[in-house]
Image (cartoon, rainbow, N blue to C red; front, side, top):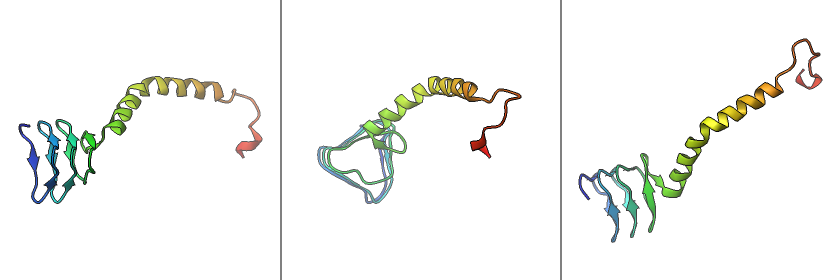
Length: 100
């Protein structure tokens, strides 16, 4: 694809797709039948058949899980704040013996 950058001595296997604006650092071995998504930055070897994306490039399932987790952060933060408020000590109550 267009605008792919491949640094010196990187070896790329057969039937491998490097999508637009992907970049590969030097001295890597990219396996056969690998897919590197657009705008990914590859900084380490990729075994045969891998699908990688992101910068730095990581296995696609891992990156997709990270994206989902980031989307869930606002709700998780809200829930943690509610739990912290419920767990806060009541002013004037005796200290918990387990805290000392």
